[in-house]
Amino acid sequence: MIKITCVLLIFIALAHFYWSLGGRYWLDKAMPTNVNKEKLLEPPKLLTALVGFILLWFSYIAYMLWVGEQTKTIVYIGWIIGTIFLLRAIGEFRIVGIFKKVKGTTFAKYDTFVYIPLCLFIGYSFIFVLLLD
Image 1 (cartoon, rainbow, N blue to C red):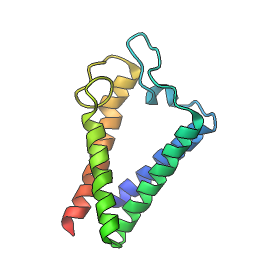
Image 2 (cartoon, rainbow, N blue to C red; image 1 turned 30 degrees about the vertical axis):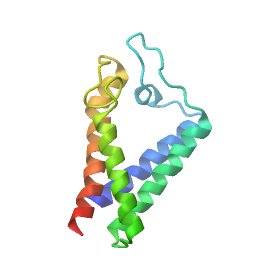
Image 3 (cartoon, one colour; image 1 turned 60 degrees about the horizontal axis):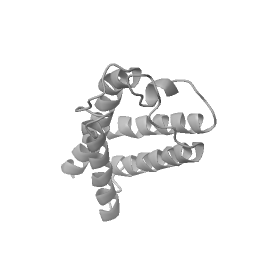
Image 4 (tube, helix red, strand yellow; image 1 turned 90 degrees about the vertical axis):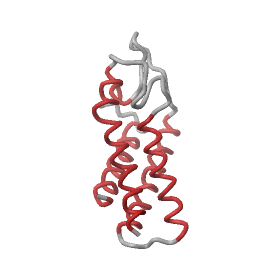
């Protein structure tokens, strides 16, 4: 399970690098909008690239857990990453997550059927591998 998570995080990081370089594919499905289809976020390209690097670092932590290099620091960071993804799945009760209020937008549909399950999978895979140790 953590192997799949490692690869997923690499692909998600690559998508962020693509967007930071000006790519537009899938961006309309990845950015939250209100019911009037107005973007609620317009992150700078540098911030999008930074998110890509953070996701690559998360992938590295997943890899370290996968190969058994479980130092105290790696385990601690793994718990934090797992918690981050589980909290993202729960959401902030307005536009993202299980309890979002804004529904019916393209982003909300993708959030429900793609992003929430993906975050639950990634979060649980980190926690599952840490509980096995």
